[in-house]
Length: 278
Ligand SMILES: Nc1ncnc2c1ncn2[C@@H]1O[C@H](COP(=O)(O)OP(=O)(O)OP(=O)(O)O)[C@@H](O)[C@H]1O
Image (cartoon, rainbow, N blue to C red):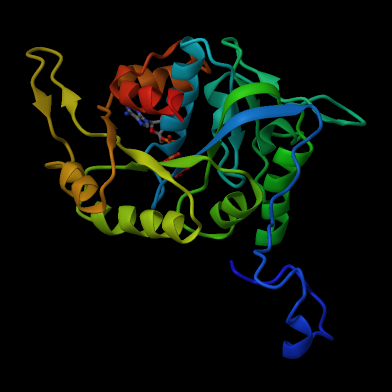
């Protein structure tokens, strides 16, 4: 993004010389709601679907909340929202002329998601890209987040419209990349890595989900998806590995029961240490 902030089609090369806008970088940042004071915005991204990005977003918010920070989750996964259900939240969200209130989970984590605005949470969102992107911007400009230490943004998978909108419109302080231990991961992590670099967004680190499962009888770690390559990839890219999270049936059952706020995901403690220093 290195366009001039001047949109005047009359401008000629000569008249641009001496113009105060010359060389200025255009900002697409959207103003937050007047009732929001969000200290840090953290994006949670994945290169492909189904790696457990929402579960890691929910874990990060819950972990920081358990440590005494006030957290929120902006569910930017508009066509596949899963955060409200994980926290046992149902719409409709309430509002005033000045904005919409996020809903609050039992642990105090605040959530906004398209599912809290729909009359029927099972109705599909069949909207085109620009409408979806605008909704994400409104989750920043129209939601009264109040005082938050950390707002985690659960992104849709990939490097499409919505991640681009979030990176351009919200003051993102860093991203966490979620992966699984499969062969394709190297390429997928690199795509997310290059997107963040291009957009000048700092990468906090990588979390590997589905790393292993613990044998209930002998505690042996079984690597269901094969050997992990995450340390090598992180080493090559100069990134931190924030944690290796096992397949843990309790995570899935807590999510299904709408009680994710009771989960303590100790496997990502390193992420919390880094987040507190941001
Ligand atoms: N480590 C884990 N142990 C047990 N269950 C998990 C784990 N990680 C994720 N799950 C479960 O797997 C399912 C998919 O996870 P999740 O919704 O977080 O994936 P996602 O990457 O956000 O998906 P999408 O990319 O489609 O939005 C959920 O039911 C979730 O509870």
